Image 1 (cartoon, one colour):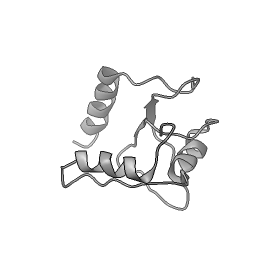
Image 2 (cartoon, helix red, strand yellow; image 1 turned 90 degrees about the horizontal axis):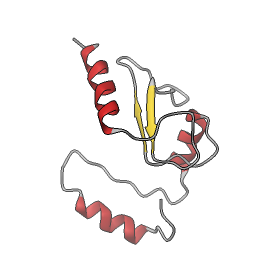
Image 3 (cartoon, helix red, strand yellow; image 1 turned 30 degrees about the vertical axis):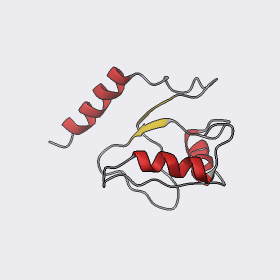
Length: 99
């Protein structure tokens, strides 16, 4: 989400992602970011957020809250800014719970 984002730019970015496991969507109405905004209880559209869910989390009528999240948003203090090492540690801990 940058000033000037449009479907054409999204298409260009999508073409850079060649892994068949990747799915890329254009959300012109920012509906997804609005849903994450509510879930994370922040006051701006949520994008560039990294959310972790515990094994067995159920996705029902509403979007569940993550057990941990990080972001790259300005002015948000409810969660830490993205830190690769810390995120990796949290992912590994959740994966260990699966064993």
